[in-house]
Amino acid sequence: MANILFVHGTGSRELDYAAAMAKLQRNLPEHRVLPCSWGESVGARLRAGGASIPEYAESPPGKPPSRADVEKARWWMLYQDPLFELRLLVVDEDRPGEWVPVPPTSLQPGEEAVARTKNLRRPPELVDSLRCLGLEDLWAEAFAQVVEDADFEDILVKANRSWMDTTRPIARALVASLIRCGEEKGIPSPLGEVRDELVEMLVPALGGTPLGLWSLGLGLFLSVAARPAGKWVRQNKRAVFDEHSNKIADIVHYQARGGKIREFIRDRMVAAGPEVFVVCHSLGGIACVDLLAEQAVPGVKALVTAGSQAGFFYEIDALVGVEFGQSLPAHFPPWENYYDPADFLSYKAAPVFPGRVTDFPVENGQPFPESHLAYWDNRDVLSGIRRVIEQRSAG
Figure (cartoon, rainbow, N blue to C red):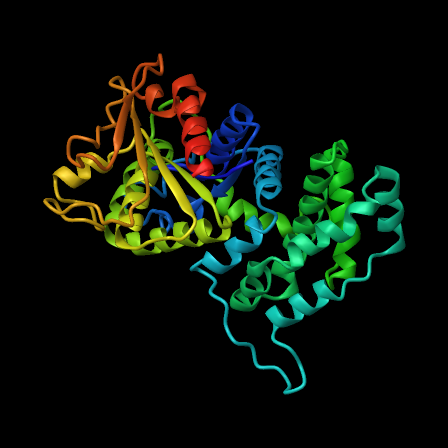
């Protein structure tokens, strides 16, 4: 089983990204697909609430996703990376972690969260529930995978948030890790309501207060997951802008503040382990080409781009990592690029990087713009990813 880091492109946010990840994992079940959701964390957003857009505030918003949809997206991401929700605490620029005045003998909030978790004593009702679910024997393994992860303590200390922000994300991380361990051993996942009950049982033991299902912890995820869900063009400015602006805004934002995005992606590459195959879509391919041209990232075995504009950006001298006329550095990993002639946002790379990348034309069977989103069901793309993994893993 290989680790595949999936880096999304322009405009993708949690609900769309979770669906794309689910599709890729379903089509490549023999491998582990890891999340790299940079859009919600360091992508473009209206930081002043649309104040610069005429008539935006007076227009009705688009239809938001349901809470059930948000929950499904949240748990899908947690099953891939139990620390996913905690990572958002660090990269949320609107609420940076700050040092909190405490008595000399007391811990900072982040340090206290680490200590409470590592010294967790499970309540008896949780032990009984896990025994009934057949998960009791897996608790120690699942617990260790969370608290012994190199990022766990670092995230909480850097974020330095109170228990109001950390208790439920920690509880969900532990439950997600437990369910994932059970699935790997053939134990069926509990129903959603049972899973949520397990989380609520852990909250008091971690220092939090038991609350209803849609209370405190939902706010954080809604703030990064909510977006208009309609797919049709509405006849008012706000809904149209909300539906489509991220696609353009992410490109502009990347050109101005791409360093944050590349740093986020690099951290996910390193966290993926000693060997990782990076699969990118659209702007994600540009960011990864820039990143891997700027610096060697140990463990990256190969790069696969689909529907990417990296070749075009190089030709117009808009890449950050390598100027037009320069060659890719020797440390750049093996690279395969997939494009669909019907996808007007996909470009060749081999003609401008001769000998350093192989292009593969594919037919997604869809008109534009649907063709730009159809790569993860394409058999040629999936076969190519499998072939790259087999070749490079063996080497």
